[in-house]
Amino acid sequence: MSGYEGPMRVLSGIQPSGGMHLGNYLGAIRKFVELQHEYDCFYCVVDMHAITVWQDPAKLREQTFHIAASYLAAGVDPKIAAIFHQSAVRAHAELAWIFNCVARLGWLDRMTQFKDKAGKDKERASVGLYTYPVLQAADILVYKATHVPVGEDQKQHLELSRDIAGKFNHDFKADDFFPLPEPLIKGPKGQGGARIMSLRDGTAKMSKSDVSENACIFLKDDADAIARKIKKAKTDPEPLPSEPKGLEGRPEAANLVGIYAALAGKSDADVLAEFGGQGFGVFKPALAELVVEKIAPIGAELNRLEADPAYLKSVLDAGAERASTVADKVVREVKEIVGFVV
Ligand code: AMP
Ligand code: TRP
Image (cartoon, rainbow, N blue to C red; front, side, top):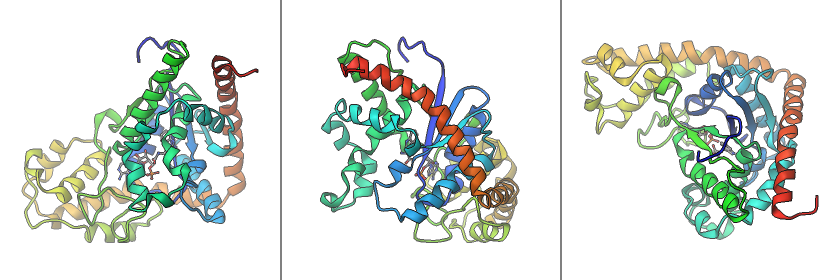
């Protein structure tokens, strides 16, 4: 982090564009809970990112509450960490514009998430989708966040945030004004969870937009749905190996072992020491039991919280106020550095 000497701070965000699933939990939210005890934490629902592709307005509002409720249900404490929605803190948009003038077209042209989301017909993608990673850099740097817990798919966007921070510091001769934020990709205590794959295809990441309804375990799935999806998960006919090396070339088996390890707080090697030589007829029921034990209580709490939107709104409002106090100050400093009259 070069010579930056400000406080250690964490920011992360999730888009309100669908139901929260096991990948989001293991790749992101579970880390949010751990980190709140070590750092000053800001957890955002990135509604402005969500509208880079079409969102039904009523659903967008509902999903914003869903993400906030997921943070709370997983164990983020709003008295410790700030939970808020991005559009309520105007400093994000203000800094994003300035960063649009720092980032280079060539940098954005390399972003793989844009290529994936825009598909073949990129002429019809929104301009917002193209400049999405610049807004993400603003989300992070408007708090001078030093650490960003995310899944592995966000690595490239984090590198862009570092490039923008570095170029800003350099161009304006503002040495170490912005930290160069570090991604936190591994699970707590270094366990897996960085990349959870689809239950129907071990080479595609678990995603809310998967066409197969059995591919993805949602936090709101009940015990029956969880057990059914795991039972139907794609596997191969071989028994489990007794060492991680034996998972090479077996993406579906590797994914199920990885999920077990991440939820049990063990390494893949520990799980294979226990289950090596067993078939999926034994391993799948054990996995289903563990997933139900860890996820079903979160789902129940999520349902309870979603039934109280007034409470959720009060959490978001208080979080936004707290976040604005930090972010407004940084934007004011940035305006001075850039030469705006303040
Ligand atoms: P998204 O649902 O794509 O908005 O992602 C929200 C957060 O969850 C980000 O930090 C992602 O990196 C993380 N995430 C999403 N899908 C997965 C997955 N399949 N495995 C691990 N992390 C994921
Ligand atoms: N791009 C992230 C995703 O798709 C969401 C996001 C927006 C984010 N702003 C952020 C993540 C800031 C971390 C920090 O998951």
